[in-house]
Image (tube, rainbow, N blue to C red):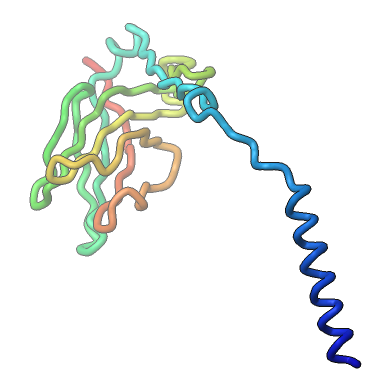
Length: 158
C-alpha cells in the first residue's frame, strides 16, 4: 500500500511540475545592439597655466625582489625606459590638483593639492597599466608582480 501511495504521489508531483512549466513565461529577449550605452571616454583637460608651470614628474619605481627604490624624473609628454627591465613609463599629463567633473579630468588650481600623473606603463611593448598615479596615495604595487610605482613629486618649470 505504501508503494502504491508513493507511486501516486510521484505521478501527481510530475503532473504538477509539468503544469507549472507550461505556465512559465519565456525569458525576455534583449536587443543587445541597443541595450548598452556607449561608454564615454573621459577627457583630460590640462590648462595652459599648468602646462607652463610644471615640466616633469618624479616617479619612484620599487624593485620588489631587491627591495630597491629608484626615482626617475620624466618630462610630461615623454617616456623613460627602466634599466635592467623591459619596462617603459610614459607620462601623458600632470594635474597638480586633480579633480573629476563628470567625464572630464582637470585641476582645480595650480597648487600641489592632489597631484596626479596620467601614465602608460608597458613591458616589452605590451600595456600593463594605463591610468593615474597619485602622490597622496600609497605605492601602487598591484600593477606589476615585480615592481611598484609611486608619483613622488612634480618638477616646476624654471
